[in-house]
Image (cartoon, rainbow, N blue to C red; front, side, top):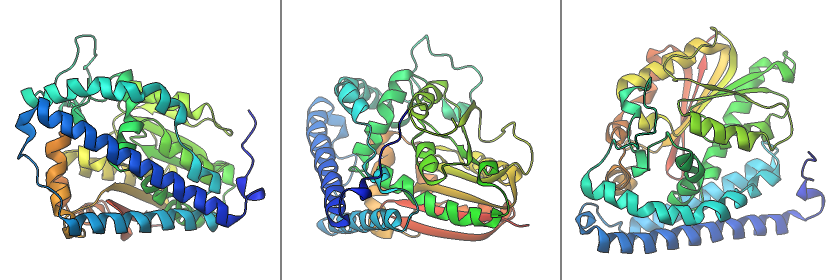
Length: 362
């Protein structure tokens, strides 16, 4: 399969940036329009929703827009300095959009029904639920069959991009710079021998981004959902380079040997874990990392560093059925990392996401 030419070879940076800004603005407008229309319909069909959440103040909306612009500029600048190629800024799932966007609307009545009837753990009879931890058997986001169906896997990226007003991929890409910086500790090792694991890889979008930034590294991904792993395999098979190795497994107990990976990432996992599982995943990441290796976690913002967005955090678990989210927003992840013996722990915030960067001491 031929690789896509570097668009910077043909288009001046000014035009490329304008195109990127236009793309992000169009995604935002589309996402806001979708949520506005669907919420108005839901308020009519499911009047029980009314009064459950608080409206966002003009000040909060203005702050949200300001943070989105800062994220966009950071995304652009990281591409400019070579953290990842500029074409990654334009990587969108257009095929899935046109194929599955109608399904998003068709799935909404089922979502509203679950909300209305307080059905949080409803699965079709054909869904195999054996072997999964009880905390995982949830209809997260009120999705039909939770994370255990092909429909859920097909709709997930589109739904998340709409949720974040077109900024989900830009937030995912913020793991790439600290990951690459952390891997500088292993410059004496050939690039093809560097091993990076993405825990809870889902549909593989983060792994695809890591491949763009680390073209020669050996990539690995684990997830509990066989449906999402099928989707990830489909996505990752389309890109050049060595195919990442995908494995169905629980992040609390993975089959890799001690000190195996040079870098580990995890994106949007921790808010969907109960407290004990969060700690166990961190402990497992420490075990699998080589001394000097780096862990990068991306997840939702927290109350301690984003008090201006408290209303958003209060609304989110109500609107999207996230049973562990409220605890997550006040959980001390830095303390958990320290407890697992990580060092050089840093945090960073981008838009409505938060990042932890930690190192396993040599």
